[in-house]
Image 1 (tube, rainbow, N blue to C red):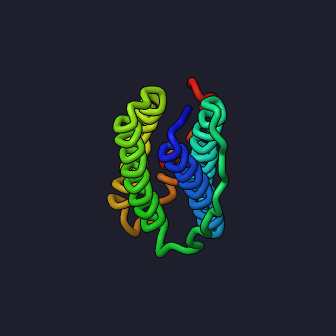
Image 2 (tube, protein in one colour; image 1 turned 90 degrees about the vertical axis):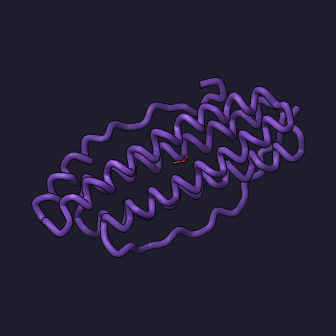
Length: 172
Ligand code: FEO
């Protein structure tokens, strides 16, 4: 049985993951508006991945006999100053998510809940990858600066991002 404190924190994390999905979906709309199909595709895959992250905790809470509480998802921004600014915002967001995952892992350890700590370790590893992937794109965009052909090439590269593997099973 999950402790009430842990259950509340997990429900909050489900909300954070849904917000992440919503944020990336807003970035899909922004990139589509700029006709950057590859950037839009990358953001779409990211939005799907965040949905999977939310579902993984959702399923876990149920498996542990807890009650999922879906909280209100706040509205994401609609505009960014440039594609680079959007990816920088994504990187900033992932750093915030890493902190909230770490806090959840700390709480699970404090509560001696090994199963939840185990689940959170999966997210800890995932966050390393998430930050590294966005950081790589930010660096490339900085490198090309205002170059139209450079942006065109990065956009084409981002189009090849594969769909995320379903990870929603609690034990995955
Ligand atoms: Fe699910 Fe990108 O944090």
